Length: 361
Image (cartoon, rainbow, N blue to C red):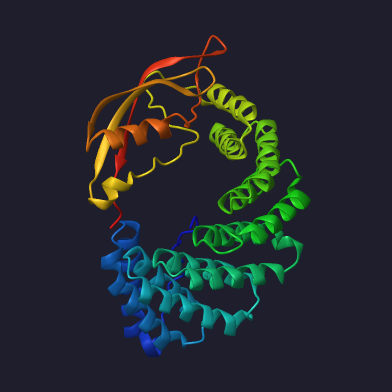
């Protein structure tokens, strides 16, 4: 996830005459925790953070909101120490304290639910990650238009979580809702609206709904090209996905158009490697599968001005002619962004690629 923990630093507790010793111990533990976090020593910070939390309860009571902040701090250092199960426990403890203090739908809880989702993401627990993000979306939605953009950001995270977990809808409803919010609040040509549209294209692409994916990528590309601050990588990615869409739909001329456009955007350095915009995996020869054989083929070829491959030849190989034949057949269908010279696409010879044949474990 894109969200990460931020240490919540609370003010040191004022001295309480009857509890002067515990106050001093708390201050010392808290200062040690703070110094270790600032030094990036998160594992070492766990002990002082836990001690500060325990002393905080003695000094303030378990329901004080500052104790919730101390629990958040403890959860943060455990997260940074890759101790995800206890980290989740302490963030949930913080949420319980804040819910009691502020109410379940107070916007101040949004960050805690996002933190909890980040833990579950790292722990590879997608169901719990999505539940935490849904809770954050719900809270943002309960707090009016002021939190619309927060809700859109969380919807994007939830959509990506569903996309990468290969859920049936691949995150499409979340990306659509985010697009609508961005369009309404920031304008339909804002880069964030374009990014949401782009992800809608990716969800359809992942479900092999190429004709449904096409208009989303076209719309995203139009937005990226209109926005001066849009990174060139955004525009390049939109062209690349449109190449894939049109190759899958058998529309060669449109694919070529976007290959050349990608070349103009790419501004490739002469020493840069050529990476395909579209590739198909070579078929694994049945005879080699039957014999449990693996191999590899190094092929040299020319990328044409239209972004096709030509003049391919085997430089070296391991495993035999069957692998070579399969590699060459696949390479014929790969598409590249051609080199642009003096404003025009040109052939580039001498490109090499390694194609490996490995039997999955």
